[in-house]
Length: 267
Image (cartoon, rainbow, N blue to C red):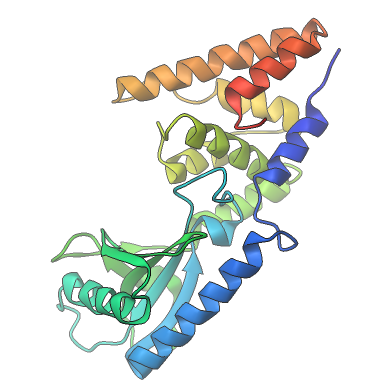
C-alpha cells in the first residue's frame, strides 16, 4: 500500500518559517527594528513588548502559502487610569506607524494597528495590566474589545496547551495544523486560522502517525457551521481526503498526486 507519510512531513516543513530559510532573518530584523523604535518613541510609557500568536507557536505559514500571515506584538502601556479608552492607545500606535514607517501601508483595525511590510504584516496590539510594577502575570493582560471597552486575555494560555499536546503526540500536532492551515488559505479561509488551530489542538491523536493524524483531523472537523460556504469547503475537503485514501489503498500514484494537489497548495 502506498504511503504519503514522508510527503506530509516534507510539506509540513515547507509550510514552516525555518530559521535557515530566507524569510526568518527578515522577520527577526523587522521585529528588532519595530521594538527599538517603539522604545525610542514611548520610552518608559511601555512596560513590555511581547511576541505572541502563531509566530510564537511556530504554526505560522510562510507568506507564499498564506497571504494573511502576520506577527502579533502586544505593546503593554503603563498608565494609572485604567479607564483610558482603547482608541487612545490605538491612536498612539497608529501615529507611531505613520511616523516611523511612512513607506509602508499602516491602518487601524480591531484590536490592532497593522504595519504592512513587503514580506509580512505586523499587528501591534495595545494592552495594559491591572497590577502595578514591571513584573506581572500574563493572565492579567487586557486588550481592546472595541473603541471604548477592554477585555481580559491570556496571551500564552493556548500556546502552552498546544505545546503540551504537540509533545504528547510525537510533535505531529503542529505539523498537522500547518498542513490544514495551508489548505485553509488555499480555499480562501473558510475557517479563521486561530479557530482551526484550536479545533486541531483539541483532537486526540493517540497512536497516530502524521499520515493517519492528517486524515483523522480532516474527518473530525465539524460539519455544521453558521456559514454555508464553510460547510461546502469542509465537505469538499473530506471528499478529497476520502478519494486520496482510496487512491493510497489502490496503489494509484497518479490519483494520489491528483488529490494531494486538490487539498494542499503544492505544485
